[in-house]
Image (tube, rainbow, N blue to C red; front, side):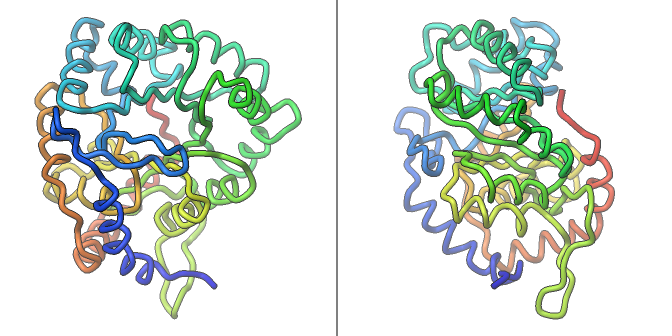
Length: 324
């Protein structure tokens, strides 16, 4: 039976409470950590997004200063990709983690859809990151059903992902999606992914197609939260939230602590955030360390307001957006 978004959100405080009970605070840094689903690994609840926001530091030394600052304050989840600057982000991350790989969770992504091309990209990623194995490789930016068909094809990237996991080049595999929760739902249902990353924010943004669905005589806005997230939970995947601030599209619409707390009040292991200034790192770390779960009523009130005012605009933006 389909679960209404209201019922799902009413269960969120319990889920968040369970996550809080499972959470542990790093004694050295004070950063809360959660278990990344069935991987069994503990990661910081705040992840460092190493896409365009890291590249905006422009110089490797400045980017390294930012990454080191985040790590020193307790961030252990580093999220990079070959597509971020054609390998520049991976090289910058590789320089920072050299000699300090232990205790850090390194995720990269491949956007290639052909198996042979994806394999070459991963080989390059290993060199740029200076490691012989990765914690997690995501298939980057799942699009529509046609894109999923390419991924699933006989010569598609999914075949390579399974092989890389089997050969222990990566411990785990996953898939990310910015704009189409219906297609992500299908991908998660059909395939053996360990992890997933999706747009989870208070405006419920992220829908390239569809009009939502009728449940209990009312239309729910189509979103990752009520389409893909329940599937990931059922399969005990490691879930990370992205687009918490909707690429700054929600900044100013609500207090930052409420925006971050909304996503962290969902049953996720971490929220991955791009932080293009050192003060952004300090602020987000402070918010993560002070996090308290929002109640179901608080979440409904916040998402109801923000989705009505901003979802359509943000959906249009994310329909063609990849954080390169």
